[in-house]
Length: 533
Image: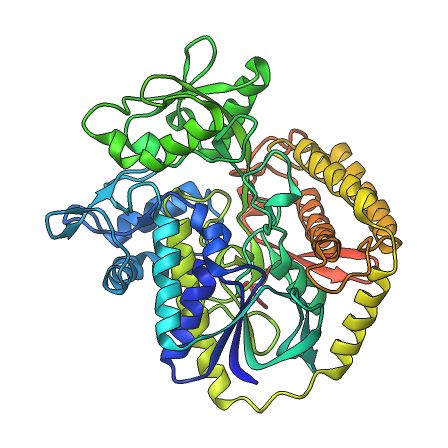
């Protein structure tokens, strides 16, 4: 038994574990993969913070709110932007090797920023931060359950007291008891194709909370990245724009975010990519030493395409990148379920609103992770010892046992591929009622098919078919919540665009939507003043 169990080993989960451990409680991390293989290591951008004398947290907050088009939660924006500089300095003290100008952490000006404010580590901030936090967790004596898949939360009388988990190496299932649980499992990128997904981006934490009765917030806001390497999943870092990079159409026209908001820019890039097959990213990479700062990106582009970025324009296209919403939480990270918290990409904090400001995502991971970890430790210090959770364990063992006896591999992959295509075409950057309704109906049909499928093999050790079966269930749950939310919001705002409701409606839609699991599908309602209420 642990005081705090963190589910997820990326930046948000590692930061949550460190914060909880500093509160004098016992902490464990359960992760589907080794932490240094989490999606966090792929994030190449930096951390927004008022680092220079000419910048202020108020300016940072104003940029964040403007980019979020009226849907950012003000108290969350103020809190995160106020503490941003301190969070960066904490990471610096822990050993993150930020780029420096002499003794000072230096910064860049990313898209949407009114000042130079993004601390960075060349083009590998996520990798450097993940490794640093992992090392600090080892030093702090955090317990790790590596390659454990959480199958459900243990919730008794509205209180979370742990999680049921499957050990991949053996196939054994057990209850990881805890007085408090922090979900930090990232987003559901594999729900779309094309996307920037890695293997484990299947929205597990969102689905776990949703099934347990916690609402999801702002799920209709799906943000695409404007420049993902064509036919690959590599998102070109925001640093490219900071170093003078440009997106151009085949005719040579420059595509600029200055021509409209974040959503309009993305749709313009998509339109150009549809017409020409791709758009081109180019820039003065070989000038002024910037080739050294983008060396990781240049190496990966060379590996994947054979192109030299310092000489050749790179063919890119938009691809799904992240969900801006997630599990509804209050500013401390608490959900509507006692003892359950969420952080990072799986949490709907309200920071990003209808469009996420570049440079705020790694910041959100460390900010929400630290807040949720502290809150979970505080809760755990006065919480009663959890019960054994036998009912949840027996239920999940039965579900897994049934899945092991049923055929699954090929038909399951076909459903997953069809779902990813449907979500991209009907619930991507442009939506309308007919396509959304069609997708909602097809998801329900897929769910019926899914219930008759399984792992495709009976093996107990590293049964990857079972893993894919469990992941598919999570993707279907999250997909249902996204589609229902997109149907409900009858306006266009930020990255949510309804061609049948193309105008922004501040009178009727300056509000957040909550998606809750009902007996016959997703139930949508307006959020109260507190997002988790």
